[in-house]
Length: 353
Image 1 (cartoon, one colour):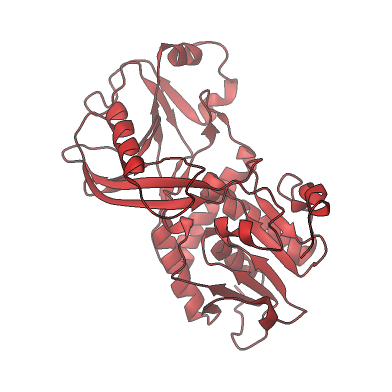
Image 2: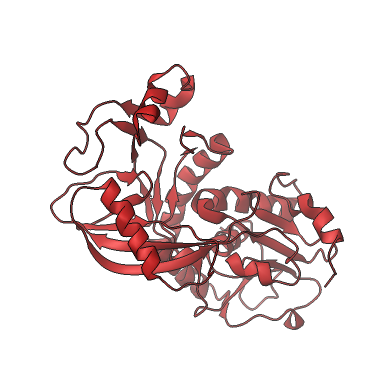
């Protein structure tokens, strides 16, 4: 890897050291680019709260998620290599068991409607032998492959040490007035991006989510359980339970309502009693069309954005950070469904900064 000299003038200024900003900065460094990261560490970050789940199927019928054949091979190669680079363990490939929610759901997966290539991503059981004393499932379920979770808190802490060691992380507030005209400023601010005057025209749709860290004694859960809620094994009888979805009260404050909702979801899904260890909240930087927001400002081509990864950030960030780097460094095209040019008409309809 080409190391950047910390005392040279950076070409790229990355605002935010969350999931998006960290991976984008890392991949720019991999291409020998001169990078500076500016982050306010006391500012709340959804990346530090998110469960970090990734899975290749979505919806009640578990159809293949968007661009699965490109995105998932990339992430399954990227994160293990990143662990070696950062000398940290945070990538946890793990199957996800999804019990059938009702007989209609089971009937669908017994039918001929299931795609022929479903076995590439999942296997089916139609009885109650799996986790019969743990999961409230009498009908069997689906076990998905190419799934798991990323310990984002550990990864971002390792990234912070990595960037500090290279002398490229400034922990302070940012002002455009302090930067020169020949630098490219890339905003990776999470849900706060909706308040950025340069990109406030973009259709952000942030979603608050709450999670509980819990303890469940005397069970051996080898897979993530996901049906209405998810239960992620963390080791040593500790688990993560999530998540709620709220488009109101967009803050990082855990609520009694959120806790009660998660307890109710747990009791529907799981049989053993549990004990709450901690309760956290974050705001996902989602968008109205459920696609990332990537590209350069329509008029000021020195200002860009890498945001809107939503609840699928762990799977989307590596692939699209690499694509953005190729766009910035080698002038390759961005995928049209993530390029902010798709919202050019919205920009034309608002007052300009």
